[in-house]
Amino acid sequence: MNDRFIRIVKILVESFPKLLVQCLKITIPLTVLSFFFGLILALILALVQIANIKGLKQFARFYVWIFRGTPLMLQLFIIFYGLPSFGIYFKGFPAAVIAFSLNLAAYNSEIIRSAIQAVPIGQTEAGYMIGLNYFQVMVRIVLPQAARIAFPPLFSSLIGMTKDTSLASSITVIEMMSVAKRIAAVYYEPFWMYMETGFIYLMICTILTKLQADFEKSLEWKQPDEVKVAMQTVEEDNRNHKFRWLGPGKVK
Amino acid sequence: MLGVKNLHKSFGSNEVLKGIDFNVENGEVIAIIGSSGSGKTTLLRCMAFLEQADDGIYTFDELNKDIRTITRKEIKELRMKMGFVFQSFNLFRNKTAIQNVMEGLVVARKMNSEEARKISLAMLEKVGMADRIDYYPDQLSGGQQQRVAIARALATNPEVILFDEPTSALDPELTGEVLDVMVKLAKEGITMVIVTHEMEFARNVADRIIFMEDGVVVEEGPADEILSNPKKEATKRFLRRILRNEEE
Ligand SMILES: Nc1ncnc2c1ncn2[C@@H]1O[C@H](COP(=O)(O)OP(=O)(O)OP(=O)(O)O)[C@@H](O)[C@H]1O
Ligand SMILES: [Mg+2]
Image (cartoon, rainbow over the protein chains, first blue to last red):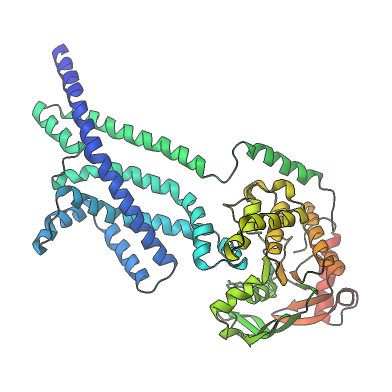
């Protein structure tokens, strides 16, 4: 029993740097690149739908339908194993980036589209009435507000992506999960190996969650220190306002 | 100055405006009254092109055109000469009070931001909001938000400002501060079209009152005459109901 315990600890300690290196070298870059390209594509897909551009809007709907309606693993396989029959070859890593980006774009475009639609139409109308054009209204009024709405679900999608990169091991990409599998096979300690790997994923996601909280705070449209004071004065003002035009009761 | 003739608008099969004739002269203050659903908001929104009217003639200064043939470019130019104050304020939530007021000057009219800031400060001063310029809309009460919205509409020096029930979304104790500001504007000779349910206010500031019902203008005339001495049965009925409500 004691020997087994020491053996496991030794395996874990020895494998930890290997996992971490693979995480830093492959898992994180794969996540960051895929999320970055996926987000840009998602924004384009969402905007052509919002702007109601004929043809492109239908294409975007079709795209979302395809990429949300089929498994991510299948998309990986088609790009890595399927495309070579048409003479298109990708190495494992780029194939994974492409598949993850395309897949993320479908999900994230829906997040962005619904966030834009959640900005009240009155904001747009007010923008038009002070003389802004469509582009100015979008860039200066609607998108900043939509960004705040979209931020939490986009972050969830990023956290999801971090873990989904493990699927890349199925197309020969040696990311953290592949390394874990190998070590587990060598030492016959799958339980502890996978627990350790899970721990590293959990740490990444914990850091991301912390980042999310900080970002969200910075996105608030309030001067943090003054909020309390402001709300107090508002309430005071309301209480102290003596002037009344008519008796009580709105007419309606 | 601004006017429509024979304006028609339907939502699906529901005809909301059934041939409205309406006109406002320079410096005039017009109050539009009428019961809920009579088409007041729709009329205002059609004049600002926030709704697309089905038929009618549109006049603004020297422009006089079939409303269906007005181009997007013309709409943009017309809006540059108009202000609109919404029932629900619609201040830009991602901008402070002063940024809200400056936006139309700096972005739409390419004014340099120093000058724009000066004008915006003056406008916020006028509506009594000079001490809240760096507050975001969420940090302001409804009455304060609406006053900033009025400053935003004023800043671009429009030829006419359209108000859609500017106090209806406010608690009764907050309507006074907004109506105060509007009285001040009326005295300065700013051309205003105001949809309102505040009869006393209408009597005090409006040169002319227009009573709408069921998508038509039933009666119009000098404020006192419409309120004290209405000719049409529908107007009398409406005023009786309103006055009874106010007494309660
Ligand atoms: N976007 C819309 N789609 C469909 N019907 C609409 C729309 N906007 C208004 N209507 C209808 O048009 C009619 C007139 O509405 P409008 O808002 O102009 O009335 P109103 O006189 O402003 O009423 P209130 O005093 O309640 O504000 C109503 O029957 C309403 O249901
Ligand atoms: Mg209305």
